[in-house]
Length: 109
Image (cartoon, rainbow, N blue to C red; front, side, top):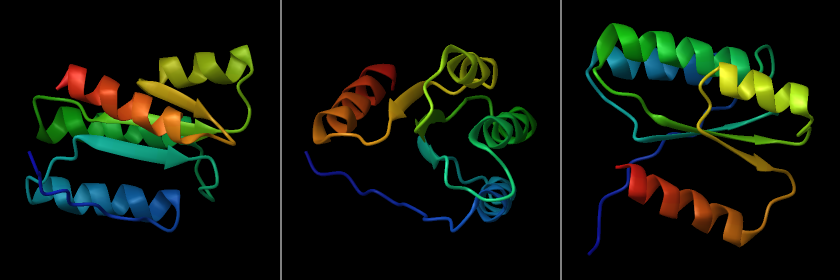
C-alpha cells in the first residue's frame, strides 16, 4: 500500500517551531517529528516541550517525536523523557535504527 508522505525540513529549531505553529493554526498535524541535536538556539528537549504545548492548544493528540542525539548519558535521556520525546536514536545511526522507528510508529498509530 502506497501512502502520500508530506514532510518539511527545518533549518534550525526556531524555524521548525515557527513552522509547526503556523501549520497548527491551519490544523495541520504531523504524525512524526524528527529532531536533531544540531538545531541552533534551542535544544531538542526545549523544542519538544514547545511542540507539546502547541499540541495541547490545537490538537487532541500528540505527534511521535524522535530525537537524534550524540550524547546518550542518563541525564540527557532523562531530560528527553521529561520533555515527552518518544524515542531517541544515537548518532551515528544505521538504517536499522530508522526501520525500527518506522515499525514503532506503525504500531503506535
